[in-house]
Length: 130
Image 1 (tube, helix red, strand yellow):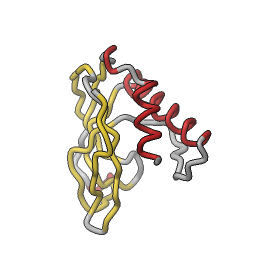
Image 2 (image 1 turned 180 degrees about the vertical axis):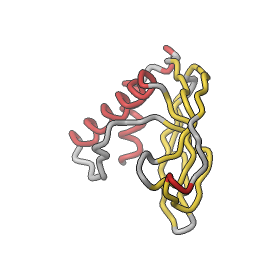
Image 3 (image 1 turned 135 degrees about the horizontal axis):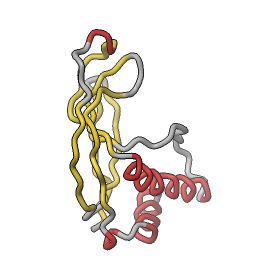
Image 4 (image 1 turned 45 degrees about the horizontal axis):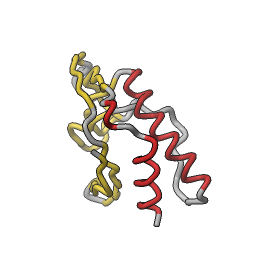
């Protein structure tokens, strides 16, 4: 079962007891393109690197186990989605680029599945590691 494979791998590879620190850096429109449809809080580069490393290791494990999934080839950009709206050109949106400085320690890791529906994405927690 793929879910058990991922849970086992993440449990082995991610040491939550080290409580890595995540830094939230700014509020922006996303995705980063000419047309946006969300408001994001982004992580600092170091934090994106920590989270991206987990993602990359998981992708390698999935490939080694011949699991079929759609790989994301863009560099990982950590973010939290605050809001969704109908896609708009950045020119039609009010200015938004607010710096913030918020740090927190990771105490658990949840693997989420994004289910895309016409009404928007629905997220389902597959498992949590404390």
